[in-house]
Amino acid sequence: MSVAALVLAAGRGERLGADLPKAFVPLAGKPLLLHTLAALARVDEISRVVPVLAARDLERFAALGAALASIPKLAPPVVGGRERQDSMRAGLAALAPEFSLVAVHDAARPFVRPDDVRRVIAAARSVGAALLAVPVTDTIKRVRDARVVETPPRDECWAAQTPQVFRVDLLREALAKATSAGVVATDDVQLVERLGLAVAVVEGHPGNLKITRAQDLALAEARLAAGEESGR
Ligand code: CTP
Ligand code: MG
Image 1 (cartoon, helix red, strand yellow):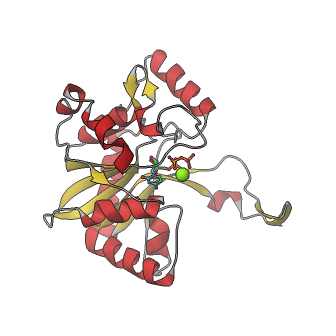
Image 2: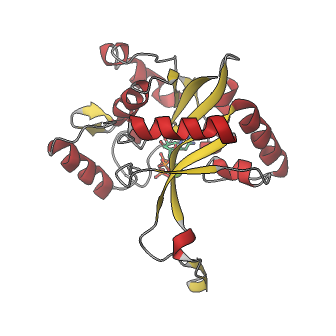
């Protein structure tokens, strides 16, 4: 079963509030997206890495030139959509039929570890769908209108990360059903969960942070300056 990775990078990065779109914000002097693409390209099981970009960023991407040529397995970019789910749909639609597994990953997670990617791919091969997640340390409250609705047992609460890996046929079916039901999810496995199908949880690493706000970028810079590599 060959595996393709979709690297979703079509968001603007409103919460980061930088001058550049988030994927192009420099991290240790290099655009965030390049760290993430390189981390996935390092995984032997992945044979193609597909960036999904906003149409407004295609020129900016092409201008990276030689830096792109140094990333193996890189496919030409696919144009994403308004919501994350639209970008995922566009990437999925562009996949060649040779791929039977797809790993969907946030461009905003440059620190993903190739070994963790391998483990989540292996789980998806046997179960059909799998994600990286970490147990939460804070107690989680479900809140509505500034009032606590419920406190789910902490030992059952995990924070979802990416990659989330799927059999391509299963993700296509789940996406079609979500679209016809008007469901928009904040992550991809939700689409499979709502069909009542099994999704394997693979314990990842808390270091696989999603760069969302300015303080996340500062932390990422500090980690790289301290000698940690992205995609170690
Ligand atoms: N993403 C995407 N297409 C969209 C929205 C998001 O490909 N229409 C991607 C982002 O580029 C990012 C990942 O999904 O790599 C996770 O989303 P998030 O961290 O929320 O990034 P943004 O949507 O860019 O940030 P914000 O919500 O702060 O604007
Ligand atoms: Mg967003």
